Amino acid sequence: MGNNELNRFLKLPKFAKYIIIVASGKGGVGKSTIALNLALTFQCLKMKVGLLDADIYGPSLPKLLNKNVKPEIKNKSFLPIDVKGIKTMSIGYLIPEETPNIWRGPMVIKAVTQLLRDVSWGELDILIIDTPPGTGDVQLTISQKIDVSGAIIITTPQELSLLDVKRGINMFRKVNLQILGLVNNMSYYICDKCEKKHYIFGKQLSHELTNSFDIEILGELPISKDLIKSHDIEHPIIKQKQSDIIFKSFFDICQKVLNKITV
Ligand code: ADP
Figure (tube, protein in one colour):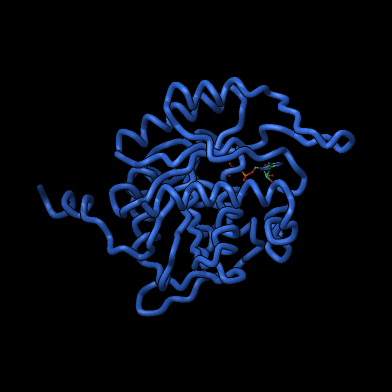
């Protein structure tokens, strides 16, 4: 095996106690929104949190946080951008937004490796990594380069996205990545009048997925305008509405994840 080939399989030094991948079968299911809110919830649990936007083809963190900044470089490493105590890094901070769309294999692997290797995170309890939809070079590189505690898969209840999820589950299993569970986003809405949950797409499809793949549903989140605004980092939803169903759902998801990764 040549040096280059060998390097591909050498793990990078550990920079967080726990590292979690947030993944989805396809785009637009709320993956980035949930990754950000998970980071905020872990912070509420008094953990030191990092959030890495590794969605190379469409980084959304700078836009979500409304941060148009360039990270400083110190001792040849990028310093993460501090957002209300959460350390964040995104390819979107480093290069123009449209550039990565045309990147393929080796360029993507190089960029991800750099994001993993050349950021001074300091001491982190947990790093959340938001990955591109689908399963490809980014997920593969991450699983080869660092010890990942597990992956959380975000889905919506429509059949099409569940098919994509099935594909993703198989791929994660092939690279020996533990799947911590599914978050079923936009799975119901709460009626203003009767205040009850309405499962507009039914519950059947996600049950089918958990049964056939033996995967736990970590939580379900409603379609809610509060979640659309949840990137308002000055007034994060999970810090404002301590009694709200959304806060409880995120708190529950994080507790279940911690129970799994800390054993
Ligand atoms: P992805 O990262 O999967 O592409 P995003 O997190 O960017 O998805 O979310 C896509 C859009 O859906 C955004 O406009 C976001 O505000 C919205 N969204 C996400 N989750 C919900 C939800 N539970 N209810 C309503 N809108 C949501």
